[in-house]
Image (cartoon, rainbow, N blue to C red; front, top):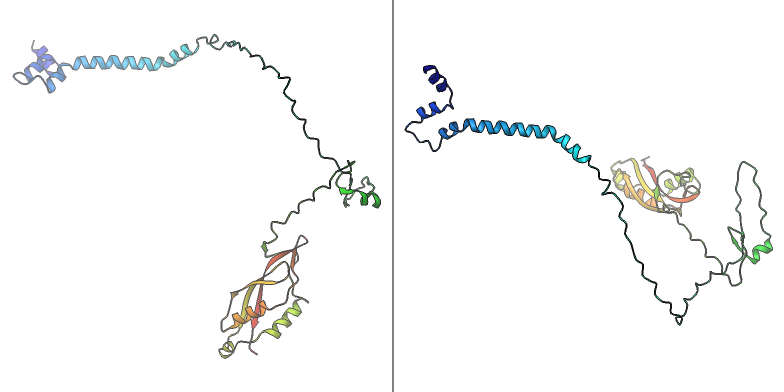
Length: 268
């Protein structure tokens, strides 16, 4: 009996220990109801855990079983009968629709083939005689014309989108009339050494940037690096007063070119 009491006393949830510990104490709340229902709560939690684990393990099997159900009957096509209404009666008194307009008359043209330079022999197509060209219209194909035909519309002129672009390096750079020698002679003849620069012994190179446009005119002259003393203003004056240059060319077309030119001021 002593051993049984000792064993139950070491068990914190045994009813005998709870009765002794909570004798003459409040048993409606606190640790007494928790210890009293401990065995029942543990059993419920254990059973719920086993059921949940069993469900998780068998879930793939259940899903596979339901997915194997034959659904061929639901995929069978459904026949639908559609009843078409009769077309409306034709009114014999209603006038027929007008015929489509005839195509415009074709004018007579003669194909003109531009010359092509190739490295092989080609079948030459004889050009039309001059009398035929005077009577017909030159085109890219040869066709018979109809009376009343009009001349084809002229082809639209496609302008170069880069015509106004300013380039720095081109195939043919712009040049001063007469070449580099004439340019040096022009600068020596027209540059007037500023008095302030002469009095302060200012010498050096003034770098001027300007644009030679498609007509060879000088535009937008500006100083890239100056030396002061009035030399910068004198360099701009001389550059702006230069005659028209020979314009630069790219792909056979005149273009706007940005040009840098050093002008040397030296006291002798």
